[in-house]
Image 1 (cartoon, rainbow, N blue to C red):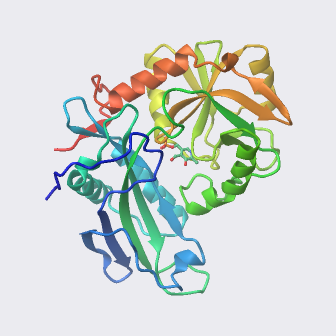
Image 2 (cartoon, rainbow, N blue to C red; image 1 turned 120 degrees about the horizontal axis):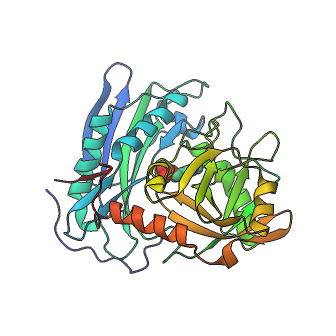
Length: 348
Ligand SMILES: Cc1ncc(COP(=O)(O)O)c(C=O)c1O
């Protein structure tokens, strides 16, 4: 039964700091497949110190959101796309897949039970975090035979704080996030662990995020630590790095590739050279830049630091294309406008 007592949460939710009471959890072993699905009333997990995830790091996760509509109903946004990526990540990491319909049903079950936690302040949502970890007690370096799948929920505000505020991004020259043939296009924990120290370093230098370059030449733009990236050319054309196997194929990115042309902006996937992009920022050919993802939605980039020099995009102001894409996408997600793409699924 859904709990109906109101939840008191601070106005500023931050991102991923608060959690609902319950999680969905199920187990897997090679004999039984997925089994023992249940709603647990605590998010504390009991793990053996030998659990394989703690040693080999076999873990994948996802991020999608439930949005409160103006009519108080609840929208999910492209949940099947998200569950398909969860399975793609699981395959890459040698882990078992979950039936997409069963995974969506589990998401709907736990979100329905916990819907009183869906925040209503502007830009907020209930973040849904499915995770799969290897739990066999074994130190041998091989795929585990036992897994745990759980779904955690967190009421969140906008990733970068309130409003469409331009962020500052440092182009990383010393470290790389992912190499071809590696795990860059899987949403696995190791990809994030390796970004933490360089991102902390960038923050200490006054930036919000790191922009990763290709691992071989450090020449081509890839993505941010937890978001894809796109640039607006002369106010009418949008470019985003092509998927080369090292970039996470974002659901937001995929949605904009469909949406942007309908708003009159051609959008293409290209190999983008950093030095050329920076020249085009400086000479005004690149008129806007933005990060895009479930957490950040669409976040304007106002400043790009490279080799000790800052390049200012659009006078560090939110540009009209970024603004329009943000508005159009969020209107669909929150059910404020008709969804002609069939991307939203309402909880019944
Ligand atoms: C590394 C990385 N790139 C891109 C994205 C954006 O993907 P999506 O739009 O599906 O949230 C994310 C977020 O999941 C991410 O972690």
